[in-house]
Length: 117
Length: 113
Image (spheres, rainbow over the protein chains, first blue to last red):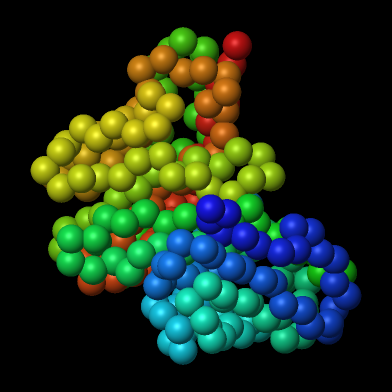
């Protein structure tokens, strides 16, 4: 059971380039999300999905796209990288929080450290 | 809207002394509260979560958390800190009917040998 797997672990991009951060989970979780972590700002939600074919925006969605074609995968696309997108990106998954499962915990990947120069 | 405040940037404690990391929350309705720990260059690891009706919740690695509804707090505690507890700790909250987790900014804990 691998849990949540993110690739790549490190990436350097030039301003204006695009790339996709991969995230896969093998726990059959319905809910998946992407966060960015910046010093002193905690984790901020970028996009999330409650199931295949359903995505929505979080707090800081600008400059990012997502899609959810399968339960397992939730890639994050940077459309045109900017230095402000230099950050550590985390993917998380959980059961859908509903009814008696409202306190279900999230599982996190190991993160992708992205530098945009 | 749901939010979490972790008022201290860094907590320094001597090895063997009690450790407390503070967290207050704001949410409509019942809160669903969590603590996570992050070691350097790693992802977040789940420590514990609030169970409705239990004001003292026990979790991994000897950690526990005290829920106080009147003070809207969920402070993380450990009776005797270890050097290996040095890490970044995050409090998170989810409101009823909401999948989204809101995180605090994190507290760096430094345990001094």
